[in-house]
Image 1 (cartoon, rainbow, N blue to C red):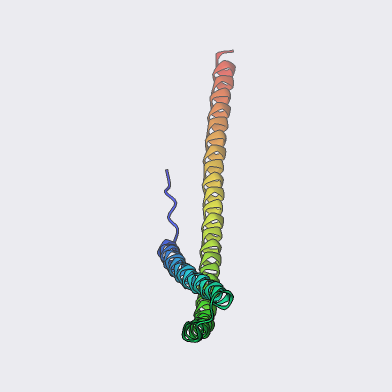
Image 2 (image 1 turned 180 degrees about the vertical axis):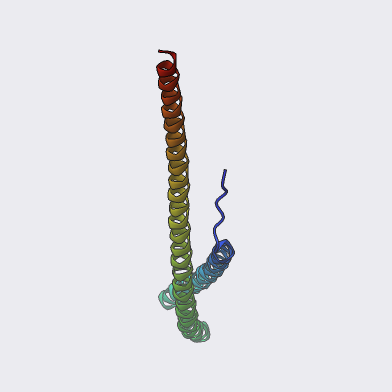
Amino acid sequence: MAVFKYKLQNVLDIKYRMEDQARAVFGAAQAKLNEEEAIRDHLIERRIAYETRGRKLREEILNPDEMRDNDRAVENIRGQIKEQEKNVEAARKEVDKARELLTDAMQERKIHEKLKENSFEEFKQEINAAESKEVDELVSYTYGERIKTENNRVKDNSNDG
């Protein structure tokens, strides 16, 4: 029996590896984005805590030094949040770029898988055609042998009579 061997199997294997690498890069980029968002969320929580503390300071006995320190802390944390938003946006862009690379790698792999499927279908058709040819030859040979046998019988019967 014939064995199917895809001529471009090494290319398909490379496409699988490229897709795996793109998937790993995407995963790392997504993890970095999640980390940057977690840092931002933590900074926002700290800002809210500082603002809450500032409101309490204004309700209690006024202490200008504490209020000034609190106001500075709020402004400082707001600056950190703005900076962190930039980090989040940069990480988001990296995720988008990694997603595009992964999508491209998946499409290339799918194209090569489809080519392999088409090649296999072609191979099966060739095998079926070869088998049909063998069957036709066998039927023709068998029919020819039967005709010869019948002709020989007819000759033998005519020689007897």
